[in-house]
Amino acid sequence: MNETRRFRKRTIFLALYLLFAMLPIYWMINMSFKTNEGILSSFSLWPQNFTWDNYITIFTDSSWYSGYINSLIYVVLNTVISITVALPAAYAFSRYQFLGDKHVFFWLLTNRMTPPAVFLLPFFQLYSTLGLMDTYWAVALAHLVFNVPLAVWILEGFMSGIPREIDETAYIDGYGFPRFFLTIFLPLIKAGVGVAAFFCFMFSWVELLLARTLTSVNAKPIVATMTRTVSASGMDWATLAAAGTLTIIPGAVVIWFVRHYIAKGFAMGRV
Image (cartoon, rainbow, N blue to C red; front, side):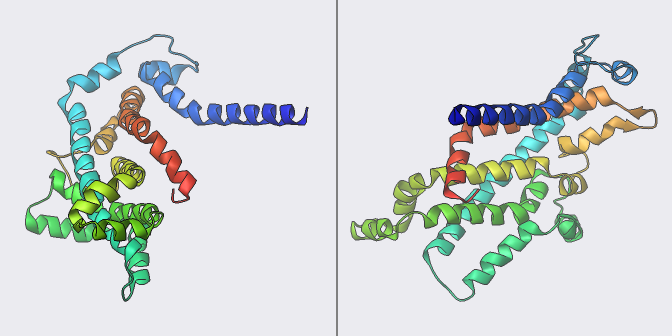
């Protein structure tokens, strides 16, 4: 009986938690199928006058759909570069001891903890001088400041869980480092790579300050485009809700593909 009661309590708690977590998402989707008049005039749990106009606006206006394309381009660039840079760095921290290694590792983490506004002015001046303003590379490289430390921290935890004897055995068998790392070591930490790539993607996808300041027209991301809904006539709630709903989709797709890796990351205590 006690086990049954505990199971029921856990089920009720989980159901309430899921309801609490999903309610804002449902409400945004609900608003995306309404008009502004319908949103402001009455309270309803579902659209009274269902409309696709908000989504049609986004998919037919180049300033809207180009924002999604721009965001995806620089986010993918940042994720690939972050993982590529973080892999050898994490391996060094995991396998070798050198002077100041703990201090360097802590310094990397402080970059992740520092607000993006601190780096805004240096990046703006540097990119203005180099002609990188309003490009995909401007945002992708700027986001390395906080994504590389995060990826190094996650990957170092996964690599430390791999016995050093594997490295030594591979070297005895005649493997060079590049061949060993790509064919033996990397498959062993693929869960860590998936987890690191997921967090790099998500943090770069939702970051607003750097992405908005370092771009203007050609590489303007969707998070900056969404601010267009504020005007002198008021807030365009319906279009903003539709844009927000579409913004969730890339993250949901990434979560679906790396869901097993994330679970393993929690099990290893590094996520």
